[in-house]
Image (cartoon, rainbow, N blue to C red; front, side, top):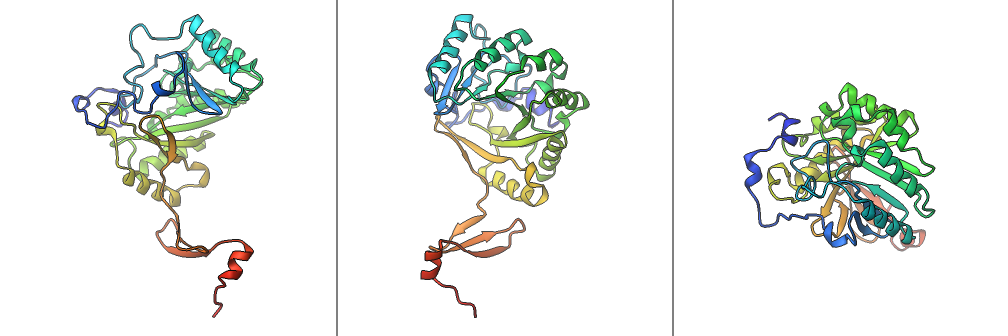
Length: 310
């Protein structure tokens, strides 16, 4: 029942699969033109140089591919081909290093990749998704931070799901990035029994912001096989987002996201605070559940439908 152990210790519940589960729940294969590249959106893509992680999350949507024997990382030729693909696609504005966990690479190898990306003119932003600062903070030392120096805008996105993950060592590891000019965002997964209550989410999100990390996404758990025991309903997730809206500062608010099964992409699925009644009238709901009315439209719209002042 421990929220940390639940994320990493196997359970017999993982043997239970459902008809709607998928080995590739977010459609990586459908959008992978070659090894190491997932190109789902026009202006950004994933570069996955390694398929190894410092820990293996039991809810991972890449659980069928990450850590497989013989596929731990791209060969030199495969990495060259992936970087050539990026160089030849001028629409790619942002490259997201994912995996596996890219920060498990040696500083030397990581620096080589960053330098290659730095030399591609149309790549303006580099984003790195990682668990390393919370699960292996000793790895995030000065050599690793130095390897990320670049003339591009570079962001480190921390994956953290529970406030207890932000230990003193994890906070120090994150501070090393931030103090060296690397901004940090966070992404979390909504997990039943781990963080699916407002009090835990509040502590997690506040703790991140207090350590200068901006909450970015709260993901609805994907339909990877054997992970149903982690999933909440969308309605439960929306209810939690409603609760934290009134409890937390705006800078603590992540966007609640669902990755549409099959590869159609991510969409926000947070609570609806505004509903259109007719051309000029909206019903609004505040964080306490009270309903309000709002008149909308251009000057011409409002002239056609004046509101009584009596």
